[in-house]
Amino acid sequence: MTEYGRALLVSSDTKGYGAGTDKRHETIQEVFVHIHEKAARAAGLNRASWLRQPAGDGELACVPQTEREPSVVDTYVRELDRALGAHNAGLDADERIRIRVAMHYGVAYPASNGLAGQAVVEVSRLVDWKPLKKLLDKNQKLNLVLILSDRVFTDVVSQGHTSYEPKEFVRVNVKEKEFSGVAWVWGPEGIAHDLAVPETPRPPAQQAEVINNLYGSVDARRATFGVGGDRR
Image (cartoon, rainbow, N blue to C red; front, top):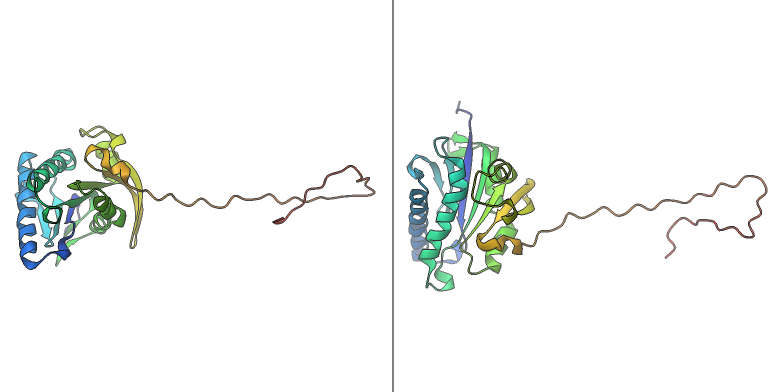
């Protein structure tokens, strides 16, 4: 039986990969790997120790306990954004590489054909959340957008273990396939606040029913009675 375990998961995905040619795919994959390795080195992380599951235009990585979690959540992300900015400088819009990054902490462990565990499902749903993709569509100069699960945001960001200010994040309700839950979105220079967050529909206001109980003889010449029901 595979050993049970919990870990920080990082899922990265490149925007617009499917629209490119075969040669474009090769370039994206090469740059994707280079940028992630460069960012990890700059953040003081040992990416070679991560259990990675490549996917062409992205990857799912299981980060070992030997790595400092706040450095992954904070410094690594900022270095990714910096490396992407350096690569994209001067390139046409269709040549730039832009990514979505999701992070979650939970049950994850190696299985026969990759990583297994509910945390794997959750982080995959977060990175694929449609409004997150639309945020990149809306902001063409944005190189990276980050989404954290509520667990990671609460434990790492809101407790002051990073250089982020909690107010830089936007609280969102994610509904993607079978997953539904709270998450937090961040983008450089507060761009995440452009995210159109759908409000949870409020239940219709209840109307009190008026009941008039009359007993015996009543002089109603100057009385006003409530009338129940729809008067439209």
